[in-house]
Length: 253
Image 1 (cartoon, helix red, strand yellow):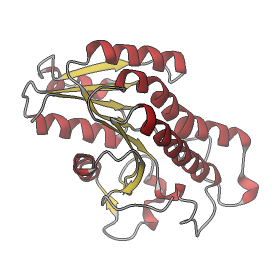
Image 2: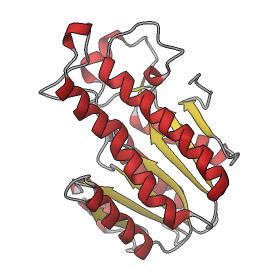
Image 3: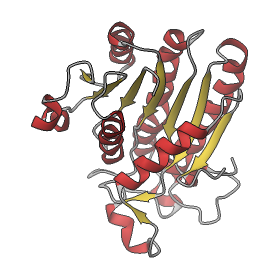
Image 4: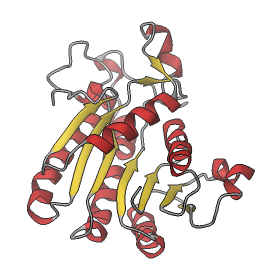
């Protein structure tokens, strides 16, 4: 296994936690893989099992917010502490609902305040990470960047309607990724962008909607993490953005 640094951003989500555990398990505590996790909440990574790891294996970066100033500072820290070439970055931000907002079932439910909040989390924040990360990745080794999106961000696959804010935020992220890929094909050919749909994962995000999930289609975060790591390993750099589901199959934009 080659020396590598893997970065997980928004590391407090269920899939991000599973990714972290899988990366560490795959590394088998060797000194050739460094994991950097970034989150506003790092309690999960302060468990005894993590504290016992070699200090070179796991590094944590705490951010107070996802304002660009904080993102810029975090990227500077990544650049400072990365021991090896950064080969994989996972941007795991996502918001579908909270106590104040729910996915819209009809047009009358649309709220500019809710739309702005969801757009900030699902679209603007990942884009700010891409903006600030690109300068420290350009002209370096091959790096694959995964941004968590969703199948409902596919415009051509939209047959049910509804969920206006969430759908729009993911569709917008897909457009930003495709535009970024066009630019990076000229100035940073070593970077590959992947828009990833994890499927319906058993997590707080999907909890209110799990009763409608077909049998066998509700996945554990551990399953999704293993699928994603395998997909990333076998995805080639081609100067384009890929829109992939948990099986590694392409989703129509």
